[in-house]
Every structure is written in structure tokens, then in C-alpha cells.
Amino acid sequence: MATQEHDPALATVDPEIARLIYEENVRERDTIRLIPSENYASRAVLEACGSVLANKYSEGYPRKRYYEGQEVIDQVEELARQRVQALFGAEHVNVQPYSGSPANLAVYLAFCKPGDTIMGLGLPSGGHLTHGHSVSITGLFFKSVPYGVHKDTHRIDMDEVRSLAKEHRPRLLWAGTTAYPRQLDWAAFRSIADEVGAILAADIAHISGLVVGGVHPSPIPFADVVTSTTHKTFRGPRGGMILCKKEHANALDRAVFPGLQGGPHNHATAGIAVAAREASTEAFKAYARQVVDNARVLAEALASRGFRLITGGTDNHLILFDVTDKGTTGKIAAQAMARAGLVGNYNSIPFDPRKPFDPSGVRIGTPAITSRGMGPSEMEKIATWIDQVVAAPGDEDCIRRIATEVTELCRGFPAPGILI
Ligand SMILES: *Cc1c(COP(=O)(O)O)cnc(C)c1O
Image (cartoon, rainbow, N blue to C red; front, side, top):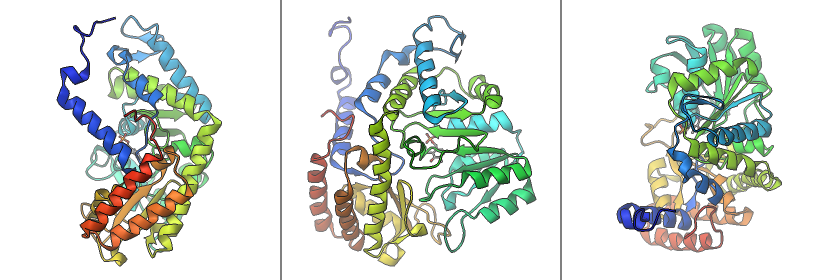
């Protein structure tokens, strides 16, 4: 063991960073985390991530490495792969992508050439940057044909997806969302991909925990390849993963390494293994169900207070609402909510007349607050607070009072991974 003297603790070596980590612990403990892409990884996951596994280089895959000394790392990666494979019922798994975006880039590299046509849900409709948005490398290096949501229902317009696909014959069709409160119809996407000979890629970055928990249909039987982050509803470390049919295993593995990345982040791989173990329990299934139940209760409570919800509600973990009728903007509302300890994010709504940096909507979700054990009665409280803040986003007395009440509520619901 290294002695205290030769290897002092963080607080001794770098009090500034130690203090900032402490402050972030306090912030995460005392506020209500409503950003739907965020969660609390467990203490066990965080421990795995803060381990010496981060020190090791292991370019390649288990038993096919370019460095010696892999007897432990190979076992870690095999465990992560096997557990994820079993959880999702996938034929092949790669747990090396550094995050969700690099996982998606590996899909392009495996299946496309620069200039190929690709299709994905447009960003203003709730899609992700990496599905072909114009400022993303995926929009710059490929010919991107975005599809959208229906003008009246704000649900993905499958008729439009089909007609655009027939017209443009994409090499790659993305099905996946980042700000969309409804389930995806994987079978419908599959049949469109088959009609035009496209590779179907399902991006379940937001919903992989819901899929594992059985509260969102799984894309595994339908998609050629499935990508995900590991840190959203999956509740693991920051990372990415790719699940695919056997026939694509080689192409995707080679795309991740040596195509895009160097050495895998073995500490994150260990965190993914731990998260996959946690996700295999009955408790995790109950968690996933509660995430969706909480979102529905929160959505109904907001709707009953006159909020205009995009698509009229939710059947996943996420709610998108328009604050125009409340006489404010998404940014003003989200910033006032954050001062009250209700931390969501401003977000474009479909056909938003306002700019993305100053849009009409606010996006919230229930994954993190459900990890703290909050349930329907807390959702009612949160809806009441959101209503009060959005009605008077400049009323700092009201905001301060709510911030105090928020912190009091948080005390009763300790967050996983926060040990202060
Ligand atoms: C979050 C997200 C990603 C990207 O994940 P990062 O880890 O932030 O790179 C990709 N696709 C979708 C649909 C997402 O929601």
C-alpha cells in the first residue's frame, strides 16, 4: 500500500478540485434532477469507475490485444459483454465506445461511405445531432434526409418516413430520439428499411433502461444494429455500447477499433458490467416501471394545470412542454426552475417558431428522481412547484421559498452514489 506521505489524498493534492467535487455532491443532493438524460449511478458503479482499471492500455478485444498484461482486463470486458448480451438478448455486443456519439459514428463507419444517403429524425422534432444534423460530422460527411413529426399529433410521421425513404433510398435509417415522449414502432421502421434495402439502426440512448425493464418494446428483434449510451436510464457510467446481429459483429468491432478509437476505457467497462448486473434484478424492473408511472403522473399533473404537453402526454420517461401559453419562453422558464432547484433544460418543440438557443419548450424527465425513490405524491409536488415558478419566473421570493422546500424534500430521498 502506498503511504499517505507518498500518495496523498485528493483534498491534500488539489483542494480546489476536491472542493468542487464536494460542491457538485451538494448540488446533486439538494436539487431535483429533471434532465431526462441524467441519472445517479450507484456507489458500486462509481467505485468501479474510480479504480486502477483506468491505468491499463488494452487496444483490441479480449484475447486479441496489442499489449501484454491483460489477464484481468479481458475478464472485465468479457463480463461486461456477456451481461449486456444476456440482458438484451443480443447476438453480439461491443462495450468499448467512449460514449453514445462515438457508438453512432462506428455505425456510419461500418456501413457507409462518405456521401451516402442517411435518414434520421430531425433535431427540431426530437432527434439527435448524430443522426445527420447539418452541424454534425454526420450531416457534413453524409447526405442527410431528415424526417419529422406530424404537424397535428407531433408523433413521428411514419408515412413521411416511408415516402422519403422510397424517394431517397438511404443506406442507413436511424430510429431513435432524444426529446420525444412516445414509444417507437420498431416493426414499422423495419418494414420501411426492408422496402428500400437500408440498414436499420436503433439508437436507444435514452431508453435502454426502459427496454431492459420491459416498459418499452425492444428493438433487438428488428434492428440490424442497436446503439446506446450507458449513463442515462441504464444508470451506468458515462459510456456507449453497440448490440448487433452476428453477421455485423466484425464490421462494427473493426469500426470501433481500430476504425475510430484507441484503447478502451477499462474503468468504464467495469462500470458497465456493474450496471448490467444491477439491471438484471427485479428491483431494476420495478425502477423502470416506476420511471414511466412517475412520468405519466407528472404529465397529468402538469396538463391539469394548463400546460400544453407535446403529443398530449408521455409513455416513456420524458415530458416536453410548451410555455408560450404561460406567457414565457423555454429559457426563462428553465432558468427560473433551476434557481428553484428544479433542474431541467430548455428545448425546441416541433415546428418551434423560436430559435434553438431560445426556444419555446422545457424538457423534463423522471429517471433521476425515480432513482432517489420518489413516487406519485412527489410528482404532484413537483408539478405544483413548476406551475408556480413558470407563472412568475421573476418572483425571486417565491423561487427562494420553493428552493428551500425542494431541498427539504430531497433530504427524505437520498440519491444513489452521493455519500456526503
Ligand atoms: C444522448 C444521446 C446520444 C449521445 O450520447 P453522448 O454520450 O452524449 O455522446 C446519442 N443518441 C441519442 C438518441 C441520445 O439521446
